[in-house]
Length: 549
Image (cartoon, rainbow, N blue to C red; front, side):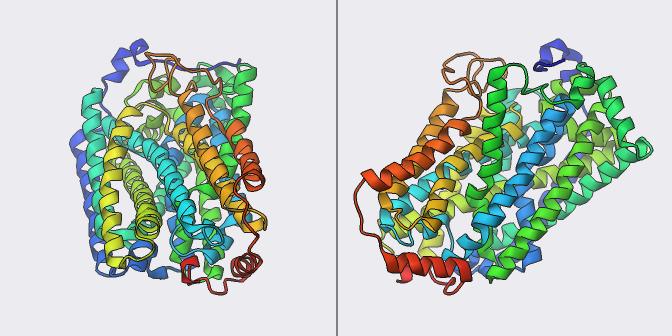
């Protein structure tokens, strides 16, 4: 049986008002985690004295440390809450998110990570402007970084609202909006006080707790079925209203030709998006050498791979063990995103629920802090320091601008998170991946490997990919036209696909070629390209930026 399963709270009103666990205990565990992470940030802030400390943590982290931090950045609320919920409700099709997110690391490892770290210093704009006209390229990179970060922040803030609403029994959209505002305020404090060093240590602690917690839940679920995965899957199928369809492809993406094409578009976004995510790329600047950057990726792949295997068991475990099954999950506050917390409550009662949910909350706080520092650094370093001030700005003043920008971004993220409440956060992150794959990846690859590529090509590719992906998202069923859209009351969905990557990514590659040959002609700077090639491949001179030449 194929088709989309989208129950609504109105169908199960008795479930939507139900409290899970003890709100006071849950709130106490939440508060404990927040205090601990704030202490870490404050202690780390004592070593944040220069721009390099604020943006790149003084390049003081080892490969394994940075690998754990990268996994912390990557294993966001989408991975823990969104994917588990998608698997619980849609089964096999939900697990495709895990596969896409994991395979994406191969692209990042083989094509981008080490080369970017060797060529730049703080931001993606450093790399793209290395042999191009600096001001327009840095401005374009900053605009793209801000856009991708905003879409990613939507997912995290929406996840925070749903999670806390579930745990503290917060009813009503207005009350959940207050929760989102509190999360945004905490995020801003993390960034203002700790910078990249504090954020990285929080990521390391959070990633460790998240993987340990997910591993504990996985072992507990498998133990409940005598370590028999087949028994678990059979019970999940028996509890699902879709029956054995949850074990087969097509439940979410196989209803018709449009949904099948939409899945192809989603796959393109997931696989190519990671290599264009600014907050992931910025992580490679926190290690001292290219060798440590490679070690970072290896550690990250192992940790992320293990976690996504855990997500399969957690998702199907929620479908099999949570009272009420997928119907209850889909009608709780937070909807699909409540699957993992509900499973924790089913397995270990209020204590395990509080621990798992607090870890998920710390996950959201840490990821949004990393996103905010990336976006604010891009504006301060690329736009304010290098475009507005033409590179004549003291590092202390640049950091001050970055902190002001972080406050503005935090405010916008709060408003966007309120708007996106109730959406599956794995799906929202997939939209951010689509924007990153469209706006950033073609430009990065062309800059690193195509000698003829010029400033005009950068602008055509980056702005073209960015604008096309965002416009297509706005005109898609993800925003309007259906009961599950962000704005269900109106219908301006003229683009049939929920994810735009199938159109916007090839278009961005094409526009890069057209812009290079049709736009303003520039002579090929052989010396600059050769220097960039040597630096990206060997790491020679990686501590300097293009601005030094």
